[in-house]
Length: 94
Image (cartoon, rainbow, N blue to C red; front, side):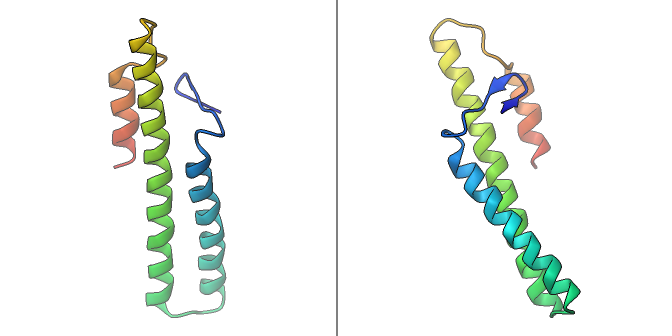
């Protein structure tokens, strides 16, 4: 997977993938709850959990990109993304 020119290694992002898969399941449960006319408070509680899981996965991906760029700089290489690009991606999550 590539994010803004940064190659993403699936092994490195296993935590983010776990969070995304969990969010996927939670979202399916939220949809089923709405279809079944479940209680509003329960639906919103589960929806908030999905949102948090997505946010954490996004921050994990950004953190991985930042580490990869820093490693490139330390080796004297051109990082695949500028600090401005990383900041823009980070701010897109907020």
